[in-house]
Image 1 (cartoon, rainbow, N blue to C red):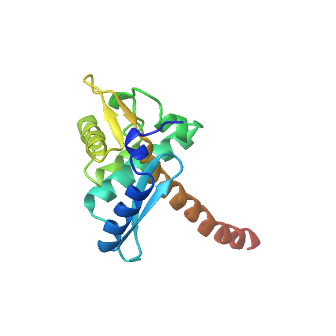
Image 2: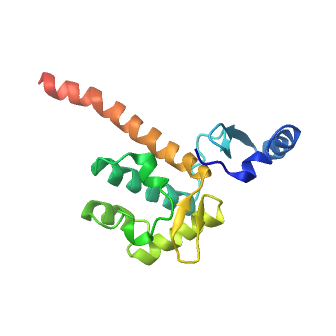
Length: 165
């Protein structure tokens, strides 16, 4: 399992100091056993911003493409030294349409998204432009997988009703 060395710094009383600071911002700081820290808001209306939306859609498309190809999602996402050119995001029409709605239409836009993830501590990019996702990226992946599970659960009662007709 990948470990983020910065995560190891957030143990013991230091973590509690950070947690207290985040509480002042009306955020709850969580330590994930997979080796990263994240914050949540108790405000159900908080939707984030365009940048967060872009990252979530980028991740959701990656999850969907891996699932469509029958690949293990975690190993697809957390492979080391990946190239932007190898990402599945722009390979299919449906994914291109979805990404186009958030301004990702070219491989350069995918590379910019990876650089944004690097600035947020969710990816490492080497001098050749190859990248590896860091443990903190699990948080975005979790959000997308939970949303997919919710969508499937919501669709199941409808499917049962349609079959009864």
